[in-house]
Length: 319
Length: 304
Image 1: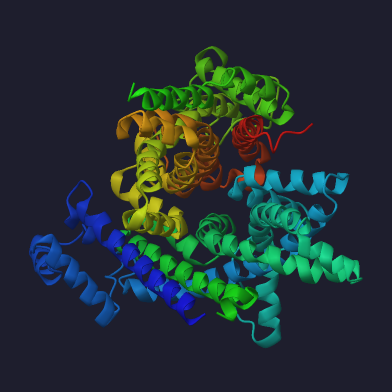
Image 2: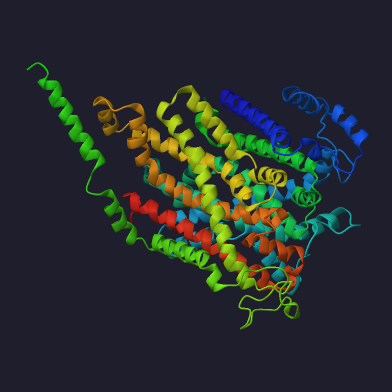
């Protein structure tokens, strides 16, 4: 188990390094003058040259890379935002909790709904229920995320005003009222993300369960006289969960994409909304920083899924 | 007399090669099974329908340009404007029809780029194996896990937002999936008897790789291309929606972005409904086509 987790950690570190390197290269190797993208265009010539020198942009590429790493690891410095005139890291960190909240809630709710649906579809393979679940799931793949958000917003925020049409909270609330208010604001964005990602969970779990249910040890468990519920929900689900957990880890990157689009529709103050604003303002340092922070987020979630995986798989646990 | 057994062995191997590579026209068999596949046929007709729309766009709809009918801004669907009008009074119907061209173009170009990059990587990794292969696949996996949308956003912001740039960017990040499938197929094909036979009769490595391995790996690659095309169209719409689309061409994402930016999203349901239906038809058609091809090729998946 230690060896497994060690291997995974090495992979996580390499992933972060690749993300850092891509972040570095994108602005410097791409066509066009990097200085116009790294520095605020509204600056006068002298200040500009001084800044170029300070950032080491007049040095060779490899030296620049080392400087970039040094800034990042020793000073946690991702540069300055053009628009907010504040360090990029601070700007992003002030938005990150909202995105993490939305993503975390989405992963939990989607698993709680998707996994049982997949199990049910597999157990009743070929019935009308199975086909309904499948059809609904495939539709989730084909719907354009922002549009689903717009539809929910139109129906449940505007026509029947059950939920707020944007934002994440009402200012001036405290304690339980604040928590209730945040939850209230989160319902529509969360529903959007859940419906979109449900398909993957359901279809994946269904396929795994169909395989597992035909295994010999399931027949053995039934032959031992175990209750059917126990056979399905304990023996089979646990094994089918293994590859579903792997899929969940791989999907985190996609969920980040869904969150960006959903936040834009609902004016949710997370990183997605920040990206939308930064695109409009050409705030390149912020865009660069958001990719890096989101990549790190994905890596962290992947490590968490790996830990869940080791817990579920006795082959690794007792190795 | 001494070389007769060898010659005999060689002709035997040639027979095996012949049999394994040329069973009674696999193409005809594939067509036979595909035609019975309901989902696959729906997908095929959907794709053909969109193709006809894209090709005949100038005949069906006026090219949306400049300012529209100022007297008819944000009008709901009517006899004159089937899909209603936008905030400039332009016909949404015209925009959606012309958008078909952009979406299909992005889908095909991205899938093509993904294949150009992914197939050689997967082929080499799968055929030669070893350490280079595991390193290559580890990097492929890392690319699969990275959050791709933010990465595409930065590249689009830096490269500029022409429609070809967008297609290029999406293609550049779609190859890992193709590389994985190609590698898996290559590994299983390389172990088959006819590859051994081809090697025994003295076929060159590149001949084996391209003629025997690649040719047999094409079907699963095609299936994955249909999936990539769907994902690419959704990605393009996403980038356009975030304001990174090509302002000079009408894609379905651009129409939705206009609806969002002008605040017409709440007031005018038709503004977002029709381009979204376009996206849905395209993605479902390509996915169904992929499912159909897969089932027609795979005896295990065929329904009786």
